[in-house]
Length: 79
Image (tube, rainbow, N blue to C red; front, side, top):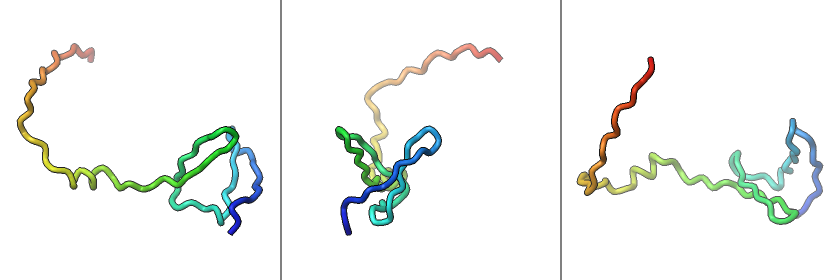
């Protein structure tokens, strides 16, 4: 597989777009894009799981907190 290929740039609404040839295809449906000088670099977004899965792996928090949280005064509400 070659690591270089010329492709056409086209307008898509107010944006410029390029079709990614199948040999350069990324897994998933999102990429990170950054600009370095005249180059535009795209990298696949690595899936990291979700927050719920991560929270299940964490140790429970201690119930005793050493600070007092003051309740804010109630605000007037105009109904």
